[in-house]
Image (cartoon, rainbow, N blue to C red; front, side):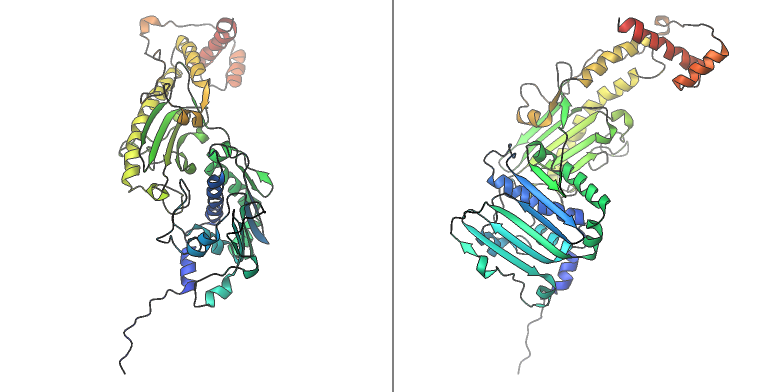
Length: 448
């Protein structure tokens, strides 16, 4: 009898699952589930810029994990044919402008978090429950999951509000330990606040362990004297919009922000992944405290999210992507424009500059500190205010010649000098003289 020519290449489930979750963190796993919820909410929302009627609720502790949303739910046919596949099925059609892309996020998150998974979904005309006992499923030859028969309804209008709920118990060791750690919860809340800052600004409510996430409004100075630089390239397949300018004096918040379909991928980036390569690279100087006002925003949007240049875990950009390489060229050029102003502002503040320049700098500081406009508003309505040129005041520093300077000298007791030096936190008589003279000018002359 002829031996079988078949060579068995079936993957071992346990090995497949262990490799699937190896390179994803628990925070990223939860982030994937929140991303899916946001996709479902946007699919239901009539006005994509007003999400005030929608919410995502997450609860986690050492006993279990729970997430729910009031999006459009998952249709039974989608669940049956595509959503629970390991990888994106060929016939699967993504929701337009979705965050999900690769078809593995939901299952990978499930397995990362726990071993007992319950899914409850209600769509407009269908509903289902699925219970997954992971250890039992792993020993079965079949890869399929099964609907709970008594919950399955198809082509039947539903009275219950649409939405999707997941409950996970029998947590993995990592999840059990992390979910009981307050520091982990706080870090998770902070990360999701950043990742979905734009959606939160649109009114979306995301609640984690009873705390409603808050996202500060991202803004840029935009007035008669200072206006951000703006560049866009919008096609049927991909929309690219880039803004760069200045904002608050906060080094922690400075840097580049890159969004894909309104999901933040890079936050406050000050590395070579955006533009800060140093002199030996193709970008600009390494990040320095003098650039603390700099803010740059990249908005990449695509109906088909496979056109977006991000990695599979949505934690960074695909540096080899021709799309992102082209975007970086514009980011670098726009950064250089803003740095020109920031470099000149630094020059104005040098301690050896005369007081007249200090007074002038106050006027510049006033211009860069006022009239901030929401980045969302600027993105939606860039014209006619914005162009590809960064606009800023031209009355900036130029060194004064010695003949335009004068010295001020006076004598005080050593005891008074010592007290003044200590109070001013300076080290020399020159600095004491400058500080006390500036104090007089600010309080008796400029504010008079």
